[in-house]
Image (cartoon, rainbow, N blue to C red; front, top):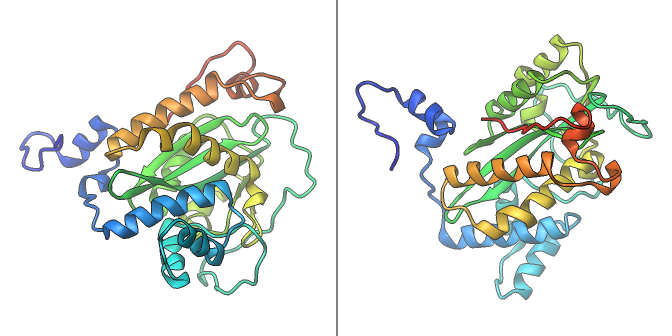
Length: 277
């Protein structure tokens, strides 16, 4: 264990900063049923491959893999993971009464320059035992990953940290997210409103409204997460940081005329990392 909880000279907060992890990670002790852990790993792979699958079809896919799991258990695990199918469906849940839902502003929009539209989203990242959540902020035009943060909980704090890091680089005209409570919270939206940034939110159950970051998650998981199977939060932070550095600075995108996201965002010839810490 790299953290000394009884150290008299260095606080836990400072130790976390030195190790590049959030303070909440110091208290992360996975208490999860090993079988649920296995099921969530499989659900993550199924959903990443077929994000249009709802709980019924994911439960059927698990059964075909030899895991006779009911739909209710599948739904519970999907809620823990923060995922749902991308097809439109009735809105069966009501937003928090203090949270404002903003309209989607990007339908048929022509996005032809950096800092026109940024977007943010959260995804589930599995560990050897347990899991963490990843939030990232991306520039739509360049696909550049401006910032990212890991958290062991789904509270809004890590999304706010990612937003603040991104705003240190620039400011978009429009910021797009889904309708998750992290992004509709006053603490999050007030930062955008104070910067005179227009807020756009995906339609309920329509992850394809945020298509570029959905593609980012798929690339990250197939090219990095599933290959390395992180054991600790620190392993995840290092691996994801290395991947985003490569993605921003070295990965050529056909849709960007075979340039890198960093070249498009900052202007060709510059080299930047986009890492969070």
